[in-house]
Image (cartoon, rainbow, N blue to C red; front, top):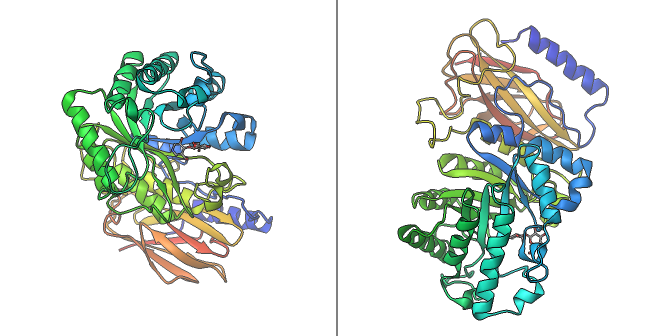
Amino acid sequence: MRNARWRAASRAAIALTGAGALAAGMALVLTAPASAGTTLGASAAEKGRYFGTAVAAFKLSDSAYTTILNREFNMVTPENEMKIDATEPQQGQFSYGSAEQIVNHARSRGMNVRGHTLAWHSQQPGWMQNMSGSALRQAMLNHVTQVATHFRGQIYAWDVVNEAFADGSSGARRDSNLQRTGNDWIEAAFRAARAADPGAKLCYNDYNTDNWTHAKTQAVYTMVRDFKSRGVPIDCVGFQSHFNNDSPYVSNYRTTLSSFAALGVDVQITELDIQGASAATYRSVVEDCLAVARCNGITVWGIRDSDSWRSSQTPLLFTSSGAKKPAYDAVLAALNNGTTPPTTTPPTTTPPTTTPPTTPPNSSPPAGDGCYASVALNQWAGGFTANVTVTAGKSDINGWTVTIELPAGAAVTGTWNAQASGTTGSVRFTNVSYNGRILGRQSTTFGFQGTGTGPGVLANCVTS
Ligand code: 9MR
């Protein structure tokens, strides 16, 4: 069903293309009838979640960086500025300048802050590295108390203790000067943090704890279960989720998140990056978080690939020049399609990918029955992603097929939330089981990725 707005939009697309606007790296959003959020933070917020990033204070003067930060994210983690060597470089002399810079930047713009990290075997200042025994225990507890008190009331969640378990199959604690002060050092740190900043969530944070079958995951789980049973003040577990070829995303990740949540703690994805930034893997991670009511949100470990601690793996959502990558589109689509959080909203019969009825489309749907579709294109040199919004007319529909004409040389390489028929020329996309039904005047979205030049907004929708 084609209507006047659709024709106007396609004229705009032709005009833009004619003006040579499809320059490399340039993102075009030609029409946006989608009713859901158009940024990571807003879309996550619609699902009762946050979407965050690690931030480096020295980059806050880079406007290309802050433009993306301020537009997309509603949670911030200082990447290094709250670590022990930064905040207490000499024993008893605290230094909060660059941490405060980040906290102020975030909070003045309505973003929240994750505090990272109060107690850790790594990035200890020299004076602490040389300490042991009860003197170190006391110094650690003083550090936790001082830093958490300084930022009291300004931190959404603290990573109270970071990376305290060993890699490999032992399931043991990591050996460190802190561990050698006694096995109760972790719970002592949590108690000190609670006393200092009682309003903040207190998390244990670690890496390689994503695979439910791994000994390290099970060891952290056992500790958290023990803490909960003994009343140690722990509120959340952070899963760093640095995925790469040696430590890949696994499909039991959702089991891991839900199993920890079942212990009575929140779960948070705290340092996400994925080697190669597979759109499908990023999408799975988002879907896993949305599927677990107590998954509060996701933080990626940097904004652009050039900001990553592993730049050469290009693991993030934006290119080094700040363009949205296919993984970005996949994350946004997953956030917009996901189910609503059962923590505050009881489960409904609404299909998971249908936009909640409380959020109307931001432009009026067609007056008649049937369906219509529009395409938002993100084009870069050699490839594109297209996000397609399918909107029902005034009546409910139970199935749809959208036909999109691809320019010569273009080919579909991947599709989400639809079944594609064909890869070149005229490609038909049909609903999958969970998003065929769309209530009157509501929308759902699907997307596809391809090589070559993507389509304009030319999309034909028919009901089935
Ligand atoms: O991204 C951080 C990098 O800039 C630092 O040099 C490094 C030093 O330890 O820490 C990186 O962040 C780590 C985080 O604090 C804890 N989990 C692993 C992260 C990546 O190494």
